[in-house]
Length: 248
Image (cartoon, one colour):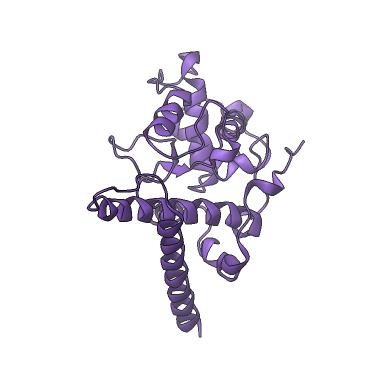
């Protein structure tokens, strides 16, 4: 049964609405899609670390964290506390015994990795099964897929949905719509996350200039936030114009 759709997970402000299309990628789930998502991730944006990326804060194994849909013990405000809470909430990575679903304690981590491979990298369930060395030739379905891999993927989607990971968090069970990457609903959630992360990064940069004052304002200031939003809107306009020109 499909999960409950979180219709209010993202609301794009009216003045940004014309740029929704920028957040529908031009490629389907694939390695190129994963690279696109990694490339658009702003500095220090809140993310969920699905696949280890050599200690980097961001990389191809990270997906956006929709903090409003995350567990209550994960702070809503981006920063070190939020990141540490997210890392603590992730299932631990455990080496798998080749050819076996063991140790069982490693299942949750392998499951979220399988969901990432299936839904973002676009790999088939047979590809996923081969990565896990699942010996399930007798359980392959009539479409040539792997039932065991499907179970891993389904479990991973549920875990990622509970963690607030985009795109799975938009349904309680993590199920994705058909051609979901073309859907305005998923694009809106990504857009809102991107806008807030961009403005947070610009605000932090402007705060370092404010610190030159005798009595700097350390908190997020409306003036800095408005400046960040104006900059963001101007660059969206430039990108949209460039894409329209190249498509003409």
